[in-house]
Length: 493
Image (cartoon, rainbow, N blue to C red):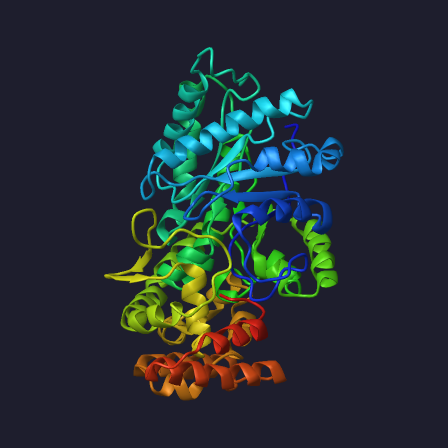
């Protein structure tokens, strides 16, 4: 294989609390994301940038803007060869189909433009398909792209010879789908060469970290990913195809737990991962010097990461304990949904997302209730002193008999609970449903001490959560408190 696999992918996830180091305000408009993309490559040293069409507005002229404004840089660091711009497509299951067509045309036009100006072509050749649940969805995207690229007209002078097949990164977003994602990949590999008349050398399966946690809780999500990575190792051996998994990691433990200060723990936890997502909070809510050091550390550690296979009997036992955590989590979140949605209304906007519900958008959900997307969900619960890492986890720990097995495969479970537990507001939890108090009590028993703030910043965060909670209950303005709390925990959500 003659391409570079990026060790990190910067994303446009709007989870930062403070101002980006290159900007004069917290909000990043669509027009400013091209500059952000360039600085991601040139300043932070992150080799891949996700250009996100899913659920947000997007600058469709990104390649023209990058070449126009930073042409000299890309002459030395060609897009598609040393630096990578990867579209996350809108999923046609939940978003209007015309956006898929626009993204395809953007990719084809980028290829022709690059050739016209003497740049490496194609600059974009790989796309992320969100919510992948079958191999047919992957193949359908490739067939649709191939059909569009074959269109000919005197007014449509696109040279797409360099881009005969669009490479697909399947993004798996639910616990059960993640666990069984190897079957989807196996089916895909079986039909790929027959349908597209070409051989596949490698694949980059992408396991989500935030959405499965939102839907099932933190413990089932981590264990599902471990099982998937183990199965990928077997798949590699069976098919002689290299797999380079991506993980959708973010700063707070609930959404992945990778910050500039936790890179080593993160790499130890997710052995076999070859690309880690670096979201906005990692890049902008910590000192820039520390961010750059951490990115270099990540490159060094993740490139050495190799798959760790889980014995079949352990895998079966892990799958058996998932419901012990997931069922408690889901029931609690359904009960908390009205409160979560109310707090989410007050979280500040950081990017130009389309509305979560309405003409062009969609929401997430657990059971019968609708919820904010993962950042809003996580930010809302942290803002009222109830880190979502704790929900269902305490009762799950009490129920399972083999905690040693859990700790063997969820290496950072104690440190994740310690880290999130410093943002607990026990007074607020006392006023919420009693099962949440049980979670806190059982986690304290498991860790051997009470959950409480330790640093000055964490204690101040606790005071702010009391003001936010009482303000929400009485209808007072809480937006300022929510922003202050996010800055203290170094992430919006």
